[in-house]
Amino acid sequence: EPEVTQTPSHQVTQMGQEVILRCVPISNHLYFYWYRQILGQKVEFLVSFYNNEISEKSEIFDDQFSVERPDGSNFTLKIRSTKLEDSAMYFCASSTQGRATDTQYFGPGTRLTVL
Amino acid sequence: QQQVKQSPQSLIVQKGGISIINCAYENTAFDYFPWYQQFPGKGPALLIAIRPDVSEKKEGRFTISFNKSAKQFSLHIMDSQPGDSATYFCAATLISSGSARQLTFGSGTQLTVLP
Image: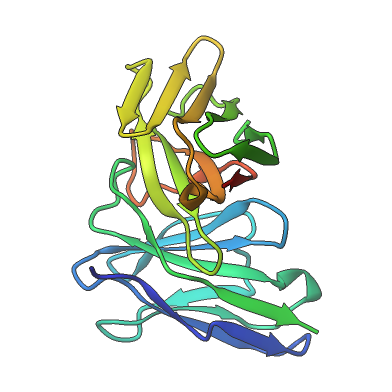
């Protein structure tokens, strides 16, 4: 069964450094998402992406964050200057269409630790 | 107004028992309510979902009960099994308008089913 993959599984970085989290969505999916989950807290929406454009973004997704589909398979989340509070599990998800009733398939996540 | 409140935070049930997880939402515009199941080391995976035009949806041992007037919905797991031990998230989203619909998650319930 096709699945969303994410790399790396764990990223440790120093505060102020840039990090890029990578995702390979399911191949025939057109809509892509990033969510994050701070330890012990709920999963929070960051951004959705379709046709090489941001579709929606939350208040969390400020100028420090950016997303990109650099080629036909990867979908990346960049954090320009990491802060301690960026430490979280970051989940990538994809869906065939962007309708609410379309299942979003989640990857296993990247645990980001900012020191 | 975008919040989805979930309880309990953790739940321990004996094998064969009924697990019940409750969620309440504030935004009356929400019109699609999925439940996600997450095993350790994995991303959330869609379990079952309901629209507010029905009061109940059943899939195997899993049932969603929906009370539109109370703005509450719940997940019932009948004949709970140790393999059901996972974290369960309720979520809500909007079917209407726009694309790439974001999910608003509850805080999660860690279910442990004892053998």
